Length: 343
Image (tube, rainbow, N blue to C red):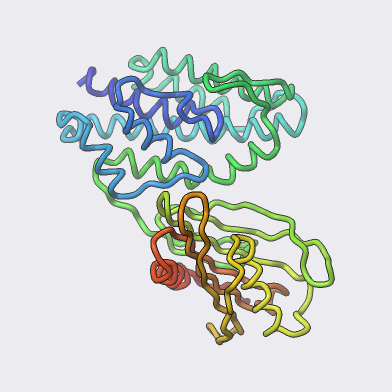
């Protein structure tokens, strides 16, 4: 039991807890794993990562049968991962607070999360990993506070506002995917998440990650667009956006058509011809198209919806490298899983 537990706990503990920055997840790599298993963990934990059923099955197919079939080991693992996830979250909260303050500040739950690691039944098995991981976390917090370079196994970098924002924005989704991967059975649970700043509720197995972008709207005014992003796989992505206007469109039909064209233009698709339709009692414009990129042909489908209740517009977007039919189907599925907050 001890040898098995040590193997699997080391795998997930290193990957889930002690990756220092979102694009350097392989800074913490388990030698016990195959290169493909390490790649799956890095993809799962990345801020813009993903996890598919095929990846999950591929990972667990290489786990010793004595681990997969031992309920006690899985229970042991789940407890350790829960503690590690909590510490991971408190670490990044501390990084954000320290970066903003210009001095080391620990989040309210940081010390308790660290104490739980040392008090855990897994502590003896993972003594070296615990010490190395906590040292990495505290170097990260210190580098953020002092705005000093952080040396990692993959290079030297600064902890910036953009880096921290990207990591925290994708943290809930990364943790959700890691919980799915740690379960030997593929059993994603669909739940509703409300995104107040986008005025939608969405049913999904893991949360969408948030990003924000400053854009020019009508009359040349600047506005901050809120975006929800979800990566299905290496070739499929979904997005829901809310574009605030700060008033009503002068000509709603013309405006939603323009926004639909602009969404595809931003991807290099310039020949789209949006069509007007009513959708859930709101005026909308639909458009689709394709463009040849360095990775091949990219297909996209978008619907922009007038939102007079919130003085703006929603956009639902699906992007894939499969076909226009797949892009349309994925956008339809996204819309079916979304509920507009119009009150």
